[in-house]
Length: 97
Image (cartoon, rainbow, N blue to C red; front, side, top):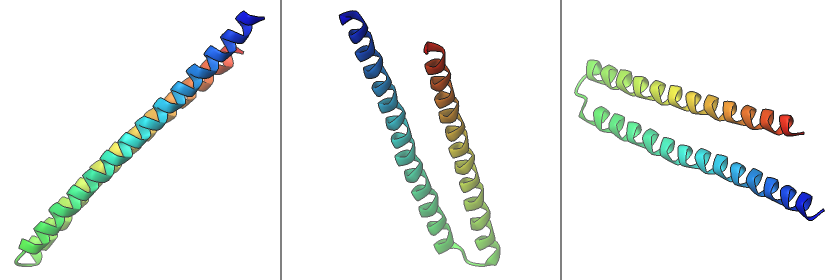
């Protein structure tokens, strides 16, 4: 009985630790991602301020658009990797039952 209880407590603590890791990964990514967006916007702001004609403004728009698209792809890749991890944990949980 004590062994069973110990195993259950161990399993629950590992599950909680895993969820804590997932939370920390999401949190770290989001904080970093926001910093990158701020950097892109500051660069765009500087570009717009120094633009002297429409052609320069268009170049600023294109640079900002390109940077934001790459950030979006990075976010989608992270989201996909988190989904894969979640599905893996669910499969492991089901196989233990």
